[in-house]
Image (cartoon, rainbow, N blue to C red; front, top):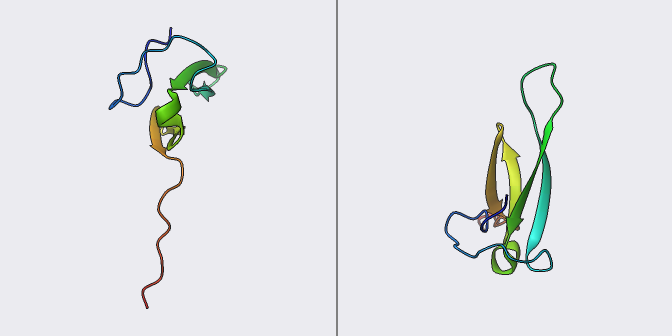
Length: 73
């Protein structure tokens, strides 16, 4: 069950589907087994700048728009 925003730095409680953004990810399990589907939520404030990603079977948040490295002149 969802309790709060997935961002570990945020304590916003999950109350309504209409607030924030819901993420539905397929999490890989042992070979030969189907993936399991899990739901994650970011509050409105966090969803404006973060997204949910799956890295090496771990769900984390990362910046929605990573800074673009500009060439040095």
